[in-house]
Image: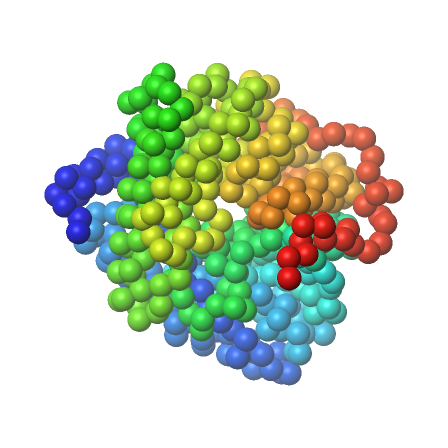
Length: 454
């Protein structure tokens, strides 16, 4: 039972410490929309999304008003479209037509993003997968609310280096096709290793084939709440530090559990998971980097940063799993650059580099996220960065991702404005030494020895 003290404490977290439910995401299975006729596929997709998600936004708004809990985003994730469009799509343009249908459905139901314009190619690419991937630059340039993801590796299968090489090219093409908007299309495109089937956060959300016909996943967030709690025990021992983070994560996750159960009940859709990631925003005090500073670092990126982030991530998970029986998705601490003012400050003062961010991704929730780089960066260099991140995920049996933005016309030292939750980012330098001979080898990197557990 929730007592009056917990209610008052939660209200304080909401009013003064930036606690919110970052997203309610409805996952929808579209496998039954497959057909050999493209128009029929589009009609089935539109009708199913608008039927299932018609009340999603209203329900989220109603719960927010009734419980006084900010629910920032209402979103939809769908079955990877390369699986749905395979029989009907004969060219990248055919997939773009589906993208327009998805965008139209997203606007109709009022959500801000729809994820699942995706392909799972961790071991190999079908013709359908390749057509979808090649359609991504045009699809993201011509739509507003569609997010795309490609899973290029896993601990079980290794890394598909043909897909990694192709994605370096696709990211550059996406940047070029949206250069009038500071290459914004790349902010809606992520390359993953070990992608989870139930992630509610964009841009990597999709509805996995192992999921039910429809589910409700909720992503909570509360960097400001954790930072405030740590301010109260400044200078205390590691034991006290860890206990404080665990207790705070428990409280944050309970709020998400309440919202998830209520949304599930009202929409008549089963509850899936709570993703208890600490997802920062550009708002002052809502920063993972500032938590790291409160732990004892002058800036994110200082010696000790990876250890502090590992501690934070682990304690968040330990506290969260006690608050909900169904924790999933990504769950941990996000370290995007553009969405976290503390990270931006660390980059601008020289404390944080891409290489240090890569080291931090070994222990964080995801990977290299919302990082702006010079628009003249070669595609092979981007592929090399993707390969490095995928290797971290594959070896460590965790999800890693790359959402990197080569901003056409911008160079190191320039700033890119994305607006809203996506914030702004300084353009960061990239290692200029060549990796093209490595990236251009054909085939895949084998799965690691510890993947064999049958």
